[in-house]
Image (tube, rainbow, N blue to C red):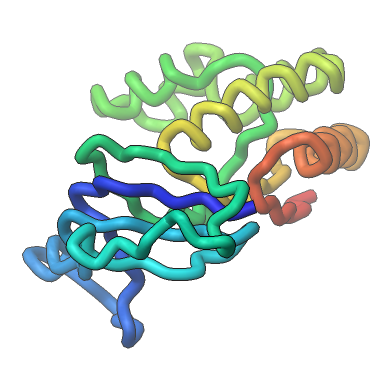
Length: 186
């Protein structure tokens, strides 16, 4: 199945040569094509170009073509998040807020937060509940443009719970459209 995306305001592209580092104003230097189209054949980018050079889509090669009008939106390659801990129970938002306000890790732990609290919550949460909570996070990162992710264990703090996390990660791999790599931190 072929898909063509037309009327792309900005088509962001990969660089021809790898930069080891980009900082400051260099981070805004991204190769892009304005007013573009993109042709996808199966899972691969087959072609792209300026809307001025859009191929004739009436030919036999474009039978069963899905057309998507980007309506002036931006298209870019998906992100690869190489360090996540998606499988955990509950939320650590309050701890994040405390950290921003300047509390030390020790102060957060004294208030009942920190890794020991996360490990306890994980231990007391079923695999099914962990899976559901993790899939909510997976859907969120997909909606933000992530296409590949590494998921680490690490909140279990014992072999049994680390293995529980790995089983949840395996289930996510089997049901998610993302490319997923797992890392055992037990």
